[in-house]
Length: 105
Image (cartoon, rainbow, N blue to C red; front, top):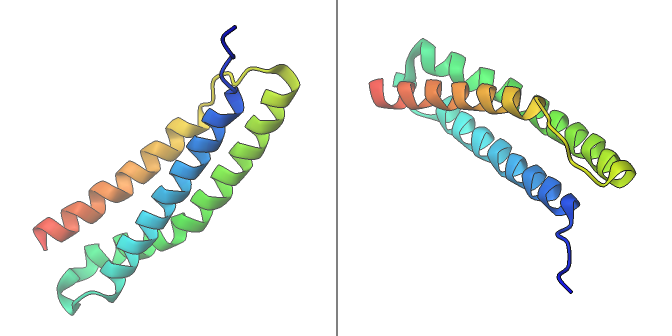
């Protein structure tokens, strides 16, 4: 008899992935902020914006995980979540801005 997959594990993997993303954003922003003086104004703004977003990212993903976990326990289903799309868009925008600063110097 096959065992049904636990829908809670997918939620936990997503939470862990967002924690790794937050750590990556923090690392890149610290490197930009402490980098050589030649990063320019755009680099500094990007780095400091990322430093402000990281705590928000951690809190948002923790809240999302808790809400999803309770929903899964109550219903057995994960269901759709639009917050992931918003968080992904913000993270991608910061990553693109940091990459542009690094490449364009």
